Image 1 (cartoon, protein in one colour):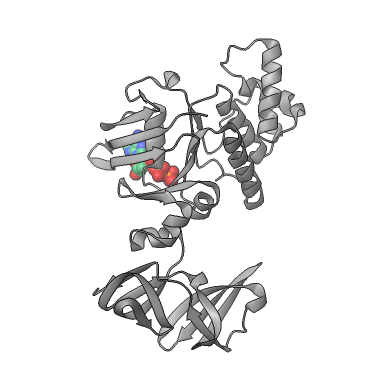
Image 2 (spheres, rainbow, N blue to C red; image 1 turned 45 degrees about the horizontal axis):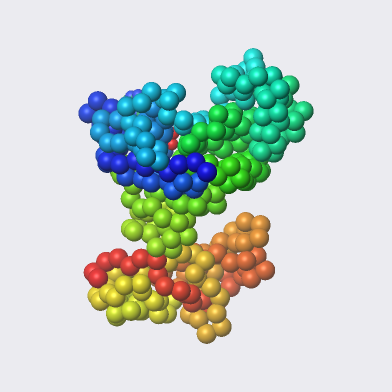
Length: 337
Ligand SMILES: Nc1ncnc2c1ncn2[C@@H]1O[C@H](COP(=O)(O)OP(=O)(O)OP(=O)(O)O)[C@@H](O)[C@H]1O
């Protein structure tokens, strides 16, 4: 198993423009953490600094007990997989995977086979050139190349963004399985919340130069620290609310609160919390959007517009009247609390 990665107090400005302003982040040994941030939030800048390709203005990077902050990149034992894989076009798959490694021919052949198998490619791929591979296959070779020197840490910079939807999901699963099998400590950056949530053990949300929240994917989704994080990791529905301690009165009936509140404001819930219920509140369906196995239902409950997510077999007709209620507690409450 590889080592823990720890970044503390890391800051970086380009000229007068601060990009990272005190990043604290820890990836447990053998874990996969997704760093989620909007485009331009500084994700690549952070990865480049961790890898040793860029310098921070302040802060520290540690791999296990080693302080690697001032170390040249080639001594850090950190692997890096980029968006498009960046394979050497004139080298075969085997040549790419073993590039720069001092292995003798027999070990080389054996390791290439092992690594290709690990990333889900047939050994016959060893002699192929990158241009003859699909995008997903190229990313798997890039992963095999990054894993070949057995790095302590692997960094992945939006490695699936150039792939189409189907390939993206199969490549994601292959990469996640490979990382788990090798128990490589990995930090993946992405702006895609479903990618972060589906792949990683832990999710860290980067905003305004700092990590705003870090936790299990489930925890960040269900217990976001603020509205901005809540809206970034999923959809939210705002319900006008009158708070009365542990519950809020809303147009959709009572909603439990995680923290006691009084006064009035908004209770924020997730669309999948709004469910059909015979004894629920009436709402008029304005729109239904099918997404395969589930659908998005938009409905009006008095003056309030709500969005719900239901399994396809429960979807109502647009224009019909349904009865709904909120299941579970609001993820957040805001306003005059
Ligand atoms: N070498 C540089 N010189 C000046 N500004 C830079 C440099 N590198 C990055 N920046 C700026 O720093 C900010 C963060 O860039 P970065 O590429 O780290 O963001 P990102 O979160 O990876 O974005 P994306 O998701 O779009 O790839 C951007 O505003 C970018 O223009």
